[in-house]
Amino acid sequence: MRLACAEINLTALNHNLARVKELAPGSRIMAVLKANAYGHGLVTIAQNLVDADAFAVARIDEALALRAGGVIKPIVLLEGVFRAEDLAIAATSNFNVVVHDEAQLVMLENAQLASPITAWLKLDTGMHRLGIEPNQCHDMYTRLERCVSVAENIKLMTHFACADDLDDGKTTEQMALFFDSIKGRNNELCLANSAGIVGWPNSHCDWVRPGLMLYGVSPMIDSTGQDHQLTAVMRLTSSIIAIRDVKAGETVGYGSAWRAASDTRIGVVAMGYGDGYPRHAPNGTPVMIQGKRFTIVGRVSMDMITVELGYDDSVALGDEVELWGPNLPVEQIAQFATTIPYELLCNITPRVEYKYIQE
Image (tube, rainbow, N blue to C red; front, side):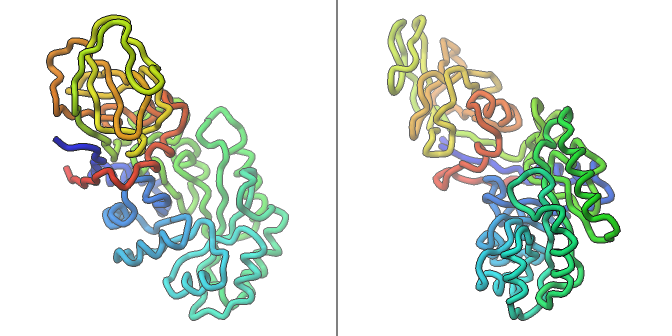
């Protein structure tokens, strides 16, 4: 009997990378591995994405873990660096650094580095999170060009706010603002995240940076990865550790949040919010057992969930339960739990066993 396990299908991972190449054949691929590769295992995922051209992470500790794991391809720090000592580490480790505000530029101007750093200048075209104002582009770019700590091949990027919605015109507005702001320049460009890759071909440019779609999950609203010829990489499973008879009118779990309408059976599954399963998943959230859908009843607890089995005699103690995966898209579980797939994948906790497979 195997308890909480995240089975990571590396064949599916590379299928999804190939799908990115199909959708953006003229672009190089910057595979996004932040947040432990969206919960899939940072170093192992990087080691198996052999056809990616570069990797992107949020923070320098993630980049250092990749280097320690033997990854030699370019690594981009999407948030840049915030301390002079980290800038020196980035130069020594050959990390690319995103510059998204003047303080980071000043740090570069004041630095004495072992070697120049490849810089990405990020423009804020409407996300209003990180990035310089478009009207700062000429001045900031000129200063980067003059900076002895910056390599010659400065690159330009932005980030979309609403690319997951094809009916929202903001992505078109962001692209127009970006191209207008960099008019006359012949730099390498990166605009498209996963949603841009799938839904906005005009955004592909020199580089694309797939994140969620690499893991087989749809970056678009109201769809699953299967709708875009993607294959789920993570299959989260556990086992039934007890089966109980419950009589009509009896309740199950904390707060007596579910009451049996008739005599039934309950399967107790070794999976809870201590493993990363969402505590707020409501009654009716599906699981898969032996190819059939059953539903959660009662509150998710730290170590267990309870599933109504009825009197399906085919379900037995020790049976495997799929919480999400190829047979039960994580996008659907996210809808039940009123969250997004990103959160579910990233919240897998260290006590879950990881098993990497090739098909």
